[in-house]
Length: 581
Image (cartoon, rainbow, N blue to C red; front, side):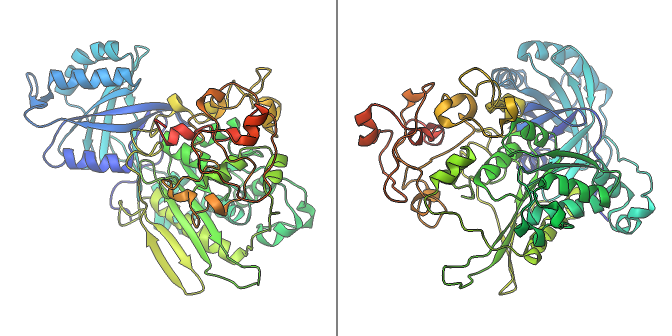
């Protein structure tokens, strides 16, 4: 059984702390007992408001953490002032942290409560944000929150997504016995572990070969709520890889098939199908309410938006994929399946060069324009249900063991690569860029609703003032009809697009971008002055991969006509990747 108490998700206010931040905080608190302040963003959750810790300010003993006038130790007034001002400036919650002796249970002392009542009303007035106190033991946490609206509420749970998905409460939860349908797996997971699965809200993005297997098994495991996201319909070639599909399903939405299978496997399951692309505002809003995300779609846009949600809303997930390389002569290369754990505050998909920025730029256009952009017609990739099952099983096993606290190592979050032809299984640790705009405190980590993913689409889409959500947003208005840039993409699409930049590894050959990608027209980057202007379709180049290595300059062809074609301006976030250029 688990090494520590397993607590199911609870209703009420929660705090999520990225694993790396928790590791640093734990080393500071235990066993010496130090003081610190957490800065946290805010987001709405499925069970109540969420605080999202993104940075830690540790107090130096005897300088910032000093003998208290009323209690044993206290944060120095200057330290509190500086942290409070920063919280105000960043519109962040201010959470003072200390530790108590014990293991599985914790509560505030009378001295703690009195100090909160003396100091937090003034701090709340200074910051204009939520302020509060937290007390920890290694396996428990309690919180006292003073909200910006003047009310006061306890913190129900603290969530730490790592190798295990930890949920700390003031005292361990109790659970009712599992029903007979899940009795056998509850003998491993425990009754409280089974209840944890029953209360979880899990998303599956992409309901093809891998996604259909994930949905079937998640329903069988007893997961309480599934969010199903895929805009595609079923084709005849899909049938051998889609679980429980038949010829009568051809032409139906994949979300309908997935919902039918999940309902059959678990009649009590709650389903939220979204037959749309993942970047649609409704899909993104549902993702932001989840406890876990399975990414089973292979498009660059799906990877980007799921990665953004994982980091901004501190939601763990797993990216699952299968690669079967076959050349034009029919020779099969090294087959591999990949199961990559996506943890908030850890090396993200951008850091690990797993998002092709050129392909992302293409993916963000309507289907007709995406097809026109690819001069070489797409060839369906090989896909076999047994390999899909291998990848899905690895992802599902990690999810179940993490959710119920059964992994041996909280720090183990390496990707798992299977190579079936050589029967190898390798682990790959993620890398992290120091100043990544997504998975570090300098970027969007834990900013939640303040940097809400869906907000990049709301309220500024079409020239007539309607948002891209209006009318279903199925075709996303042609680029020639939309004022390009910031309102719906700036800061969200970290796109290098078609500029070949030697300083960016994923733009070179062999990294999925640059000359390996098909061009979509003039490869020039638009200058900053293009914001708010409209563009028309420009001439296409004569060859694939027509990449021009120049910074922020218009091509001669575009300059002669004094118009910028739409291909020139899909680099809307150039400066978000290369500040100062």
